[in-house]
Structure formats: C-alpha cells, structure tokens
Image (cartoon, rainbow, N blue to C red; front, side):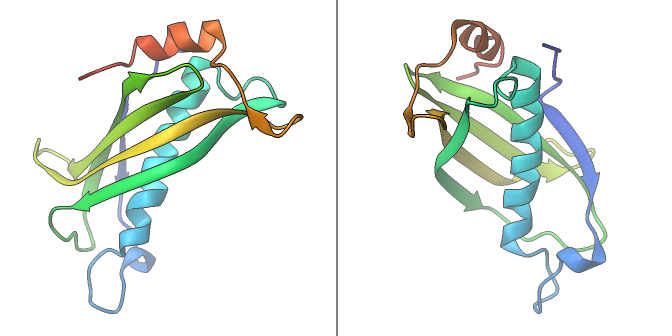
Length: 135
C-alpha cells in the first residue's frame, strides 16, 4: 500500500464540452472516479480480484460551470467507515483556487464478486482507509 495525496490535477479537453459550451456534467463523474480509483489502489482495495469496491450511490452538487480550457483539481477523502461500506466525499475546483465548483459524495460497498454479496471491509483496508477520514 502506498500513500496517496488525495488531490489529483488535470486539464480539461476540447471534447469535455457540451453543446452549451461548458464542461458536460458527466466529466465530473469521470474525474471523481479517477481520484477514487487512486485512493482504492493506495489502500489495497483492488488487490483481491474476488472482493472489491462497488459504487452504490452518488450525489453531486454542481456549484458553477467550468469552461475549456481549464486546469482543475479533484480532492477525495473518506467521511464514514461502516462494516461493509464507506462514504467518500469529493471537491473539484480550479487549480490555484481553493473554492470548489463541484461537491459530491459516493457510497462504496465492499463486494464479494465470487458469492454475489456484500462483504466486510478487510481489516488492512479499513486501517488504510482510516488514514483518509475527514469530517
């Protein structure tokens, strides 16, 4: 397991825009997914092919539009650790500015793909995730 900074940086692409000339709302979901996967890698949640994360819920608040070209950041952290699931929070903003343009949460369930059911968060993953808990 490696330490993850929780914040990723990226630039918008021409194809990220929609017909109205701003970044399409679906791109934010992809950016959050990228940050989420990096955190999963850091805590070892992707190490076992039989047990892994599944997205159960996502809530997004879009605060203001983003236009191309823009340099952005996406920050991700854990807000709740349950027995078989945990909640992650996200904030997206312009590089060089602390204000967010998007805030979101996701609920992640640890899932046993072999037996098609939820699974208890493995202790090493729980310990690693606890390092990323913020309230």
